[in-house]
Amino acid sequence: MEATPGRPGPGRVVVGVDGSPSARSAVVWAADEAALRGGGLVLVHATDTDAASRFLTRAETGRRHRAGRELLDRTVEAVVAGHPELTPVTELGDGAPPDALRRAAALGGTIVVGHRGLGGFSSLLLGSVGLEVVAAAIRPVVVVRGPSPPPVSGVVLAAVRDGDDLGCAVAAAHEAALRKAHLRLLHVWSVPPGVRTRLRGGAEQGARDHVLPLSDVADRIREDFPDLTVHADGEKSHSAAGALVDASHHADLLVVGGRRSPGYLGPTIGRTTLSVLQHAHCPVELIPRHGPGHGSS
Image (cartoon, rainbow, N blue to C red; front, top):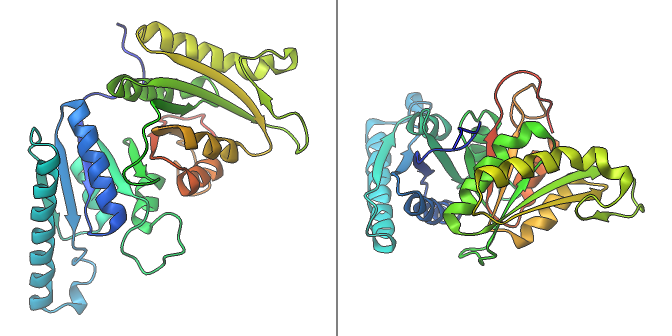
């Protein structure tokens, strides 16, 4: 098969560990993903003592290191109990959590984070670590959302805005193949409230300009993944983010493409992407785009 841009390899899965319920859910998801890929799993805990070194005694620094090591050891035990075939690697660092996760992923890993950490701002819909990681992502990042354990729908959902989202669709196809699930490609375009809001398969003549890129992406996916069941849907909505969030009710994973031009929050997150990351009902995987010419969504 000809190589397709954006298709992920069996790279390591890197997950942040901080002891929060959200991070525990992320570890469970990451371990399942590593087992599906047959690849490595890296558990990362960052004490963030470098930034606070002027204010910490040596004893406090040592206490944080010991607590971090104990947390990692307990997490390894929990992972191996669920997946005896895995041999997790642990990394304990002194720097900031986003930096530690990026270093561990390097150029060949997928980063997994919980949607909220141990920070004191419970009203935040996406924790500061997750926000910083996805805002500057150069590797795929998964934000684990939704109930734990999640229900299984047998569907991986991919948001397709235009032909530049082929890489996002390929990544979603790869995830669907791993799970033996169906792939749903969803293209959403905005219309004023009150206008007829649903279209399937591009049946309306006036929507051809919208669904043509979706059809092209779907054809390429069917060609490269002949054993995969692929559904391509177009939908009108007054809110692209709202339509994707609604669709995430019936998905095991939602895959979205991040833009690599100056955007709303860093080079990756536009307003639509941020809303999806904050409100989706299933884990969200962000696939960064690279190169010029990509607007923020």
